Image 1 (tube, helix red, strand yellow):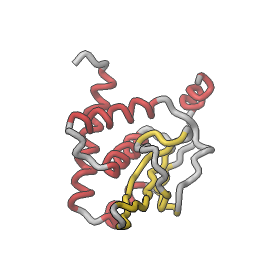
Image 2: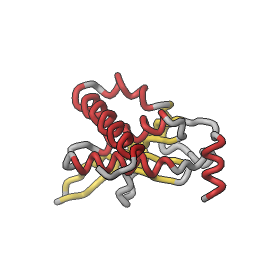
Image 3: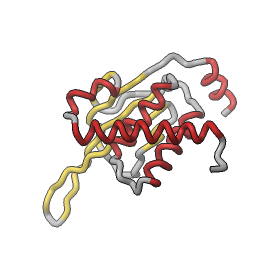
Image 4: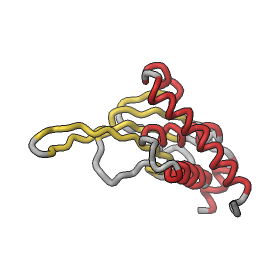
Length: 155
């Protein structure tokens, strides 16, 4: 409870977006809500022209904290959707990436899916350290704001 007010607000926002993501993923077919994720592109989109924003760290912290408090009941897709929506509200350019990895367990091939979020600096949420192959990206790009340019110069 000794957290600053802005962090409490971020935690509440993350909890609300995670709840919406949970309902959508569990109850509504992907084709109906995927357009809310941004512009779709094949593979992993290049985010090198996007500006870096220091608020991303706090956004990812809030999502990870709520997920941990809820005993990790949210999937990587739900976490990535929440991060992208929270970044979108703040006009932070980002990319939600859907990827796959083939595994050979006990002489049976299986496919593992994963979702992660990238910004100008790289993967900000969902990095597992495994070599997932990007299948599709959902991008949201915004012109660099003066505050994000100032943050980029200061870091």
